[in-house]
Length: 143
Image (cartoon, rainbow, N blue to C red):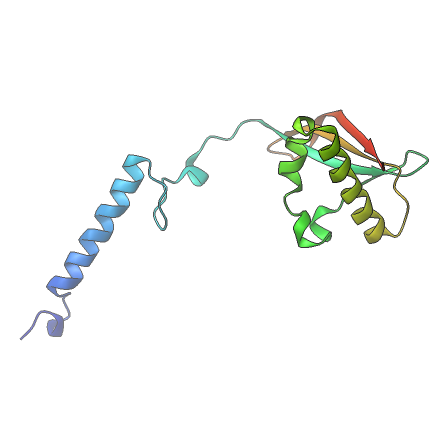
């Protein structure tokens, strides 16, 4: 009677299992991040007490601010965080174009005028999510 018929895995099943476990151990121990095996950084990494981030607000003519709702804007605005991080490194034309695009998108979404976009660097307490520091880094208005 064959091994598989007696309820035990066959030679091919044992070989496949051994190969899978070996690949898992090698990728974890070697620091490889090859799909579907990861080095578990997302799950095992130490988290700092605070995290730095960016927030964009749209201010009207009176200076009243509201958060720029990037998640509610069309999909091509999804990379806004990376753009905010690099905003200061853009040349004047690049900043003007980006600012104009953000203002237009917010005005279309909220159906109200925007005088300027303000970019704040924030420090957030990781556990509570409370903003403990917020500093204005850049402002830009419609060109």
